[in-house]
Length: 256
Image (cartoon, rainbow, N blue to C red):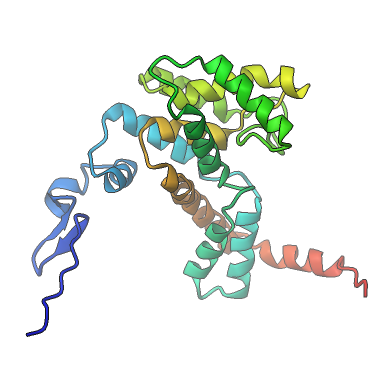
């Protein structure tokens, strides 16, 4: 007799009459009662977040939803120009551009801070850890993730707001505190002051919520999906993709 196949999951399932998600009846217990941000958190952690955690988590999603004509937005618009019948392709094109320079900083910063906090004990000296980390990064000629921004040269407007919200909710944990310490000490090591960028603060805030470090970029992509859909909706109303393409094409210089 052939072995019976089994594919266990705790996410969800359905019958002809019901849909179950996270052990809840989707229609009766979740729809209209649980927000999308709360559900996303719940799906990943398998625990229902507190109202404080939801507030911080959704503030992060809002902070990462859009940042103007970034390469991810341009890629989505140009893909839509090329294949307007494939909205999924345009969204995917934008999301595929979320990497080390755009969006990926959220995970990079969270991972970096988590590595610095390994084995430091219950009462870490954030200033000393930050100073040593920045000195080491300078000696190794590496960038400190989350420091600096191509547009916001003095201060990223998202940064103080996210820190304030986390503080108000009692969720300004070790990752955020260490990142703030890096913001205080790095000028004396680098000889210049760089702002803590919003994507980096988002990574620190997500890490303080106990979310898996390896999935932090996924949350950034979840947020940016909404922004990209907004760009595509605007592209339908007021197309710019063709002009972007023509501008590059008209100014291309062939250099054999």
